[in-house]
Image 1 (cartoon, protein in one colour):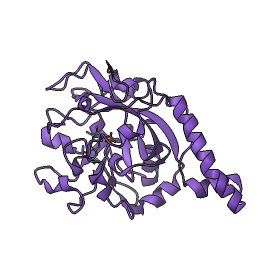
Image 2 (cartoon, rainbow, N blue to C red):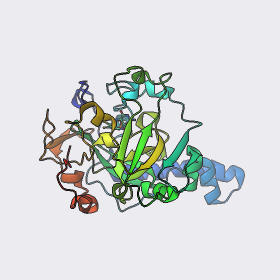
Image 3 (cartoon, protein in one colour):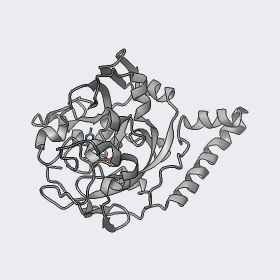
Length: 317
Ligand code: MTE
């Protein structure tokens, strides 16, 4: 982002785990976890699995495939952007200070009835699934992650926005006692992002509550973060506390800091360079490869139609 820090390629990378090996390993771990509890408790299989693992691992939705290896969990959990904890990539230890229980989520603004709900209760209300998503950071590095969670559309349905609501703004947390980055008052805290209602209800817009078959790590945005894989990574706000439905386009965190570099739409496009670097290719963390970046990060089939009627806007920054 605008704050210059070490580049991804300065970090040692591990071999990525091929998707099929990852799946086998996950099934094995699940079977091992369920075994002793089954024997000890005499519960049925479904009950035992729930007791052992909570909602994770969630059942994979086979509709979302990657075309590249899943990135090693170690990379995804130790190489992060989370400016609340610092403007460099090695924030994972500092992020452990974030207290994610209890955690409340507020849904308000132009909705039938605003409400506040405990994050665990929200997660229990909605059926979780696992999806393999690519993630393309505006800084030209990319990863591929097995997220678990629920479609943002399910939360929009719970919220019952009024007909006049056009956008949903999402806010991160604000707590200077745990997040050293938030003591740097030149940033416009809290982190804010926004989507149109059409984007928020697109099938791809996902709220991740887990990753790699378990609860999501704090450094990846626990207890819930957005995953909108056709957009640059900064749109995928972490550790959300509030969803506000509104008729005014939200000004997001990075847009407020440097609107010429980071816009509202931020759809991935290899042909439109960032003002300071090319977006033509991306460094795939964990594979050692630099590969061509794809329009909408390869998700054009699902999302290109959202933008056909949007005229005179910078859709790709
Ligand atoms: N969300 C919050 N709250 N704070 C942040 O600094 N960084 C964004 C996004 N969400 C950020 C955030 C950026 S720039 C990227 S690339 C992704 O988170 C990184 O997600 P990851 O660390 O899980 O890979």
